Length: 111
Length: 390
Image (cartoon, rainbow over all chains, first blue to last red):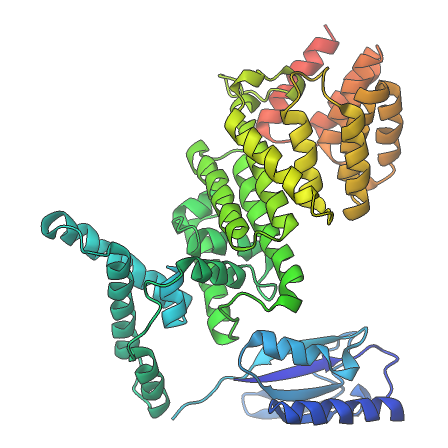
């Protein structure tokens, strides 16, 4: 089953070259284990644009959809056998230290 | 139920199927007689019912058809070690990815087989509300794939802690003297002890599991003396100790001794040790309060909590005199949450009474009453207050 891990890193999280190296190491071991599918790091929230649709009318606003203190910093998509496995891999993500990660199963569309 | 959950992999469907199978059994067995192996018969019938339902509901896409053939293959383990299945089911229902508030109800429903109506009564919510909470939890287990298995060794201590907490809460839910039907509450106490026994049988090397079983047995042994014939709470010191269950006290004391001998103390073992000291004392006066105070001190190191500190204060008061205990209790009032806890003021009032300060004692009882404790305790405090102020 695929799990989307939404990473909310600590405020002072890099990315430093050291963290980039750590992530490459993480990706390599996740690939070896056959669980890695995709990942991405987001630019800061002030680069975000939100589009809202009201009956077909489109309104753009400056900034992320949800104004919360913690900002979404990146994501990883993993293919794991169960939630415990996904949690174990999510816990090893470099951005998680003093931050948080939300683990959401993807709806698998059959047919 | 546990085995069918393993075979089917969906708690919601498994539960309905087991219920259907039991209904068939109730209808057929009185006429046709018992099958050779009733357990295997029930599991087999429930499994077929579940597969029928999955077939009916699925739109037979290729993927589902594949998973169906997987499920329909002849299975082994129908008569196999069912205790492993039960343990896996317990770990699944107590998984930390489920909200803590739903773990106890879900365990009661899926592991203990209590009806949703009974569980709703215990938690003082309407039945549809409880049903909805349970359905949401079961769907999360299915959709997020919370695994049905005993965690591997490296993850076991943490996960076991979560499971023991749920079993402990099942017991305290039953033990609480708040409003609610007495029968259901006694059921909960028995279920908690049964669960602790299952865990202890399967994990005999875990001292905290042994400690929890001992704690529940020792606490439960005193249940007959806790409330008098009119339903009033009776203080430990005033309880008729001949009403306590001797057999259970002996079993619990032996278990706690065995657990502590493993030299890895934890909160349940220490609480059990305290319960054992109380239960084996011939009277309140002849209790080893010094030792109890010492064990509370040790317990605080494992579980730093003001409530434990308050209990230690009471033991200190018995060992060294009321003034020594009152100093500790008064210091706890600095914590605003503790100052709103009726029990703290009841304990203070008791010590003040013994120090012959009736006016201060009455004041403390009034403070406790203002904090709106449960009904049974309200009556108790009112009685004590009448005793201080004639």
